[in-house]
Image (cartoon, rainbow, N blue to C red; front, side):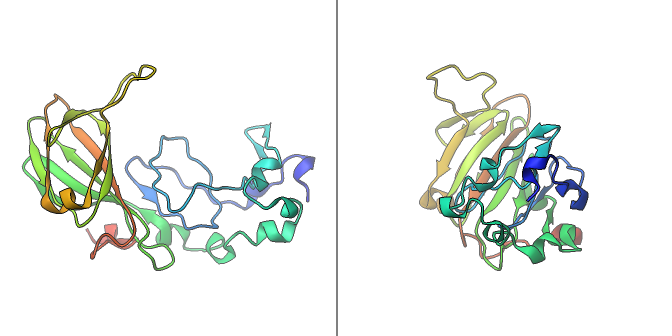
Length: 226
């Protein structure tokens, strides 16, 4: 109701957590959250729709259109409809960090390499997506075997995956294809793909999986067991 009067004061009701590099959050739909000041990796389920519930950010006005961009036109001024998009119980959860905070969990490791869970847990009881981070030291290699297909993105270093070159781009020229992204098919994942670091720094790749790929997936909070 006070959107056009300046700051609607939503930050006065908000709790903030300092971002930690390597850690993350599993955020269910309908939960208000703000982008952090670090570059983040965000696997998502369905689509990236959003509503901006904060009317003033760093002194800059946020237009009403960013609140209702994914709302039916006939509901653009229906405040009850807009608020009902939120999952109220999850937004006021007094144990929010305990129920949503993630830290890496080592799944497998070998000579010169480590494979960690970085996105895990279920959303409303469903395994919708998950992610792993593979780190390989210079000169080392490993064979990855997963139960299902995944998308891979190289975020540091250079190397090879089978016959494919891997390289994190420092500069991308117009029209130039990069060598940082790979799709690993279901068949290849189960057969195993060999990843080798041919560079002088760690090779780091993130791979993300779709629904119900893993029979055993860590739960939110399992990092505390280590």
